[in-house]
Image 1 (tube, rainbow, N blue to C red):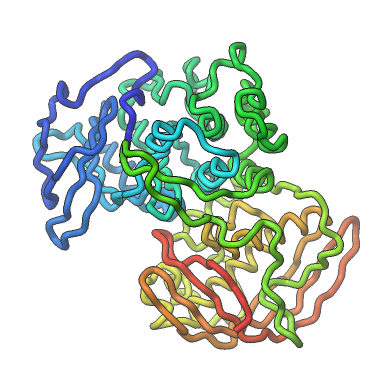
Image 2 (cartoon, rainbow, N blue to C red):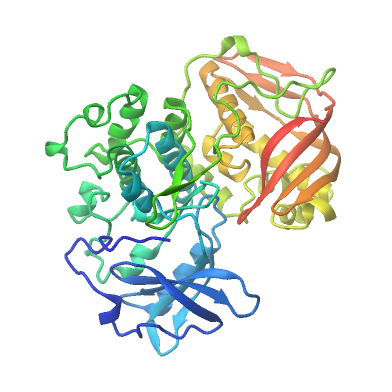
Amino acid sequence: MDIPAGSVGLSGRVESMDAMPVPARPRVPGYELHERVAAGGSSVVWRATRVADGTVVAVKVVVAHGDGDRAVRESVLLRRLPFEGLVRVHDAFSLPDHPQAVVLVLDFVEGGSLAAVLRARGHLSAGEAVTVVAPVARALASVHAAGVVHADVAPGNVLLERSGRPLLADLGVSRLAVEAPAEVYGTPGFTAPEVEAGQQPTPASDVYAVGALAWACVTGEPPPPLGLRRPLAGLAPGLPPAWVEVVLQCLSPMPAERPGAAEVALRLFDAAPCEPLRLVAGDDEVSLITHRLRSAPRDEPPAAEPAGGMPWRPRLSRRLQGPSTVLAGRLAAVALLLLTVGLAGTAWAASRDGDPAPAARATARSDPAAPDRRPEQLMQALADLRAAVLTSGDPAMLGQLDVPSSPAWQADARLLREMSGRGERYEGLRFTVRSARLATAQGERATLRARVDTEAYRVTGPGSARTARPAEPGGELLVRLRWSPGGWLVESIAPA
């Protein structure tokens, strides 16, 4: 883990943990602290072991200015947000004898930080930048939909698993370290101009930071102020024009002109194919090669449909594919869905007529043992959620259904773009799980063998055009799942 010392209050207040009223090596009940792995202006991080079970975690001590109890309550609330792409918070409490010191117990992420990668390599390619920045933007889309702002998106707060998967860290930590409401906190170079001028952080200021993150990935430095910037295409020759366009829109000095985080994620994926990200371990030279976050090429068609029946995903005509159309602007409407135990489709499913066990299904996705103990309930919960995603047409909901950048995520994102490009929407779309059983399970992955039928529904087109689609039985599918802090997500779907 790596947090740069430059991540301090922009008001000029720079503090050292050693100078704060906290012991240089505090006693944290229930945890044995090991080496100190990172430090910032108002925090310090240790690798630690949880005494109860030996789990290796990161213990971060943040000096919270103001009400320490309030800081703990906010941290506990953030801990309950079941968002994919965030470093998981296991616990939050005040340090004994130091009530203003908030202890955050986090996942220990072993792949280092984006800041370490950039220090070792100088800069990344556009494809590598997509591999890192697009999932960060997708995670922010879910965070923003829940009414939360990160306020310090920077390379030191983007941590990398050894697989190359990026995770956004320090959600809410910036608020703990702010001494007064008017104080500005953030990482220089990655803070939006309106925030530097004294305004409160907003989702638009987070989007500015995403643009600055992308700029830094391909140039090695954050973007200078607008009047001092050289053309990005000149600093990093060979960048795809569409990639440059979305990054510059993120960096607009006018917050209203910046796209939403969900739109940024999709446009970056469309602008350049992902490339394997070469990782560093700490400050060492480049030493690791990651797997592609995208398991299949961008233009690879979905798996062949089972003969004689409609697949779980509604069939779409491929001859009408056109330019990608970004779906955005509906994040606020999804906020309540994102906060309901990570099951965006559960409330929708519970309203179905004749639903036999809505309460049981509502907990299936958050049960690690569900693939073995209640596979049909888990499969139906995922099927209900997929119907809700396709009916809404909202890409911001994909993070609650699919593993980011997986074949399922790519196929669903492409399907939503195709629908939007043709001006189509689904009405009354529902799936019924006829059978489901566990096929394989290993670690955080499981595969279900399932049959999912599609009930009759309607497709509305431009104007008043409406086409009825009949009910269709589904062939047997292999649905590969992956466990995440928010519950089970779909990784891929293929005929059995």
